[in-house]
Image (cartoon, rainbow, N blue to C red):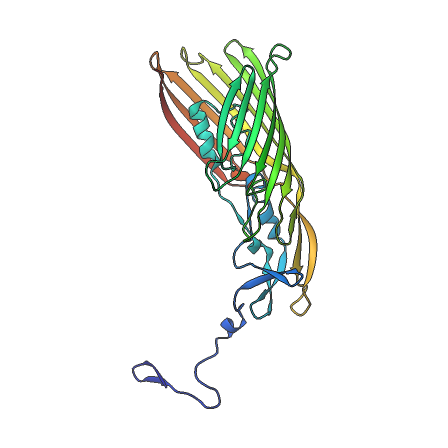
Length: 341
C-alpha cells in the first residue's frame, strides 16, 4: 500500500491495480504535437514555426487564426488545433528609432529610412557631389544583410527633385517574416525606387514629400508555406521652417507611412479535419500578407539656439497602428542638447 497521509492508505487491488485514472491526461497529446506535411514528414508545433512582423505586421498570424489544422501526437492520435499556433508576432518599437532621428535632425531625410527598420545592420553614408550613397553592412557575424542605395539630386535640370534606387539582400527574413524551423532559412531580395520633392513656401519655410515603391522576391522556403513576390511602398510629408518663434530656431512637423506590404500572399497547404472521425486532408489556400492597418507616424521637433555654438531641442512622435498592427499605438519624446566646437 501507499500511505498518502496519517491513517490514509491505499492498497493494491488484484483486479483494478493501484491508483486512479487521469482521463484528461490520457486524452491529451502524448510526446508533443506534430503537423504532417506529406511524404511521411512532420513538423513539431509545440512552439510557433514562423514569426510574423516587419512590413507584413501581424497579417500572417491574424489570418492563420481563421483556420484549424489537424495535428498528431507522438503515438499518432489526431487532434484539432487552431492554426494560430503556427505563428507568433515579432515585437519591435519603431517609435524609439523615430524619436532618435528627430533629435539628431535626420527625420524626413529620404536616406535615413531607405532600409527597413527591422533589418539588422550598420548603415554607412557617403556623399559625392550631388549624389548620396548609403551602404548596409553586417553589424556582426550573426547577420548577412547587405544593401546599397543611391540618391541623386537632379539639381539644375529639376530643382528640388531627387531620385533614388535601392537594392538589398535580406538574409534571415523575408519582408520581416522569419522561419523558426531548424534547418530552414527564409530570405529575400529587395529592389526599390524613391522620389523626393522639396517644395519651397518661402525663403525659410518648405515642404518635403518622399515616396518609395519596391518589390521583394523570396529566397528559401518553409514547411507547408511558400511566399510569393511582394510589392511594398512608403510615403512621407514634412514641413520645416526657420525663425518661426525666435531668431535661429527650427521647427519640423511631419506625417509618414513607413514601408509596408501592399500585395503578396503566403501559399500554405495545411492538414485539416472536417470532423473528429474524418481523415486528415491537406488543404491549400492563400494568406494575404498586406496588414489590416498600416503604421502612421506623427512627428514634431523644435530646436532653439541658446548660444552661438549650442542649442537645445525637443522632439515627440506618436505612432498609430505601430508595427502595422491595428489598434496598437506608442508615444515617444526626448530632449537633446548639442554643442558645436
